[in-house]
Every structure is written in C-alpha cells, then in structure tokens.
Length: 181
Image (cartoon, rainbow, N blue to C red; front, side, top):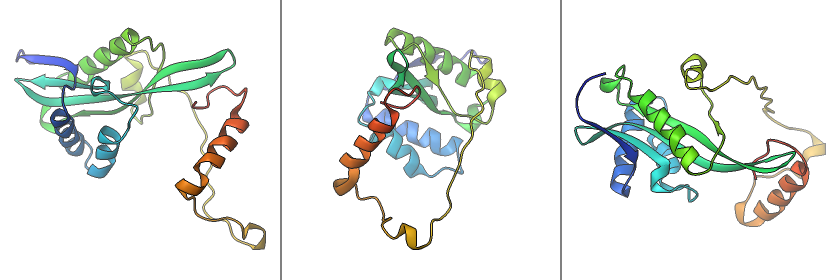
C-alpha cells in the first residue's frame, strides 16, 4: 500500500455522496449512473455514515455502501447490513483500499449493533478473505404470461396496489426465515 495520507470514515455531506456517485460510475462502467444516484440519494433508510469512504490526500477514491435492513428468522427479527457498491477508482486499484473499507464497514456495523452482513458478488474468493461464505441460490424467472387465464394481470400501480401487495407479502412470509421485514 502507498504511504500517502488516507482517511476512512462515513460520508459527511450530500456533496460527498455526489463524489461517491462519480467513483461508482467510474468503477462500474456497465452500470448506469442513475442506478447509483437512486441508491445513494433516494434510499430514505440510509444515513450519511452508511456510505463509507476512503479519502487519499483529501479526495474520495474508494467507497462502500451499507444498507441497514431487517430479516425475519424463526426466533424473531434480525438486523443485518447489506453491503453494496464496493467501488475504487480504476486508477487507484490494487492498493488495498477496498479491503481497508470493508474492514471499516464490518467494524461500523458492529458498533451499530448489527451482527450480520450480506452481499451479492461474482468475485466470491475475494470476499471470503473477510469472513464471508458463499451461499448458492436459485433464481427462477417467468419471462411472459399469456392466455385467457391471465386476463386479470396488469402492471403494478404503487398508489393503488402497494398496501395490498405489502399485506400479501407479510401474510406469505409469516413464520418464514430470511424474508425482509
């Protein structure tokens, strides 16, 4: 690692969040900038400190975002931190910055009383170095539904449908482990 001055902490302003969006946009060229804007600026469950940053000589060069969530378990609700948008500017990679930030993020979660963290990745071996374990999952997707039996299917309308869908979700997941609360 370079011996240049670095600082690791939570974001301190919306201006810094805007800088993090630029870091994420540069780090993930196949993902739209709007995706990061939505996650960083519109998620009302997040505090500024939930976005952890590494500054090198005063400039944000790496970041990680923590999403505080709750899942149901057989013994009750459990708080966890979803880890996402682990990003380092391409010019600053291979300096160990993401690893420093991940360690900071895991420590931060502990100070918040959050005992569990979860992330989704395609570089499992990297995250296993930090204590994460790979869990295989199956994804099923229905591409299209056609036919007379499905004439009542329509597009979701948030104002009209959210309450009913939320109730259906809660009823379906009662006594199930792993569902988001």
